[in-house]
Image (tube, rainbow, N blue to C red; front, side, top):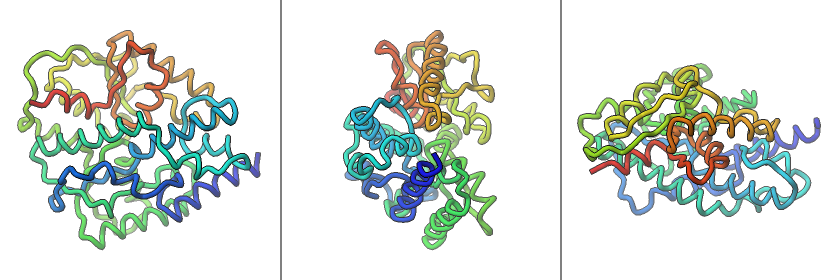
Length: 321
């Protein structure tokens, strides 16, 4: 097990050093969603996606291949996936092609977010050269030296281009750039806001359809609810868009896990946790709202066909006039 752990860590560290990404995929995968959209090249806030939504389709593809190599519970991030393939197959070959359905949905989420920011008249811009990964996995694994080096590179790129304000789109990236980076980097001076916070602050500028959109149940991601206090904003936005927001028994700061944090160590347990959460949520509504790509992936995989798991950006975008 010691050798396996070293190989896993080595793969992730090598990929981060070579590409700035935890998986051996092309950097083009991070920004290709923006092609043809005509996004602004200047503005008050740099749109920094953090790459999680873009990486999930490659992880989905890798999971499918792993299940062909050997029995493996669906789900996971680089740790769990690497465990199954080290010394068996070439990881880079398995992640070379993303899962088509997941990629399509990932692009829909990213484009929905850009549309919502524009609809709210928020001054933002996108620079493909500055977009990338926050290093969250390195931090979660306790690889603090590697994490600090990566964070320094990310911040130096921002500083060299005069970036002062950043808008993030997922809880992991928000937490890294807003709460963790300031602890490990000296002289860190960036204003970091979640796009949900900016949308809620500019709610009067959004024009939603006036008809009722029906009931939805919200699943709070741990980092937003317990660390970044992004709790009321998604509820205000969903209500304004005509949704009847239902609160599950375990919500807000007392939210329940989606199954993601333990999947690398106990995949079967992770799947059971996700199934328990879906069963709990579907008691309140047949549409489950997620605010995080990891939560979406874990809950979507185990949800029955009559239950829709949807990212909040897609649901809000569907209600724009």
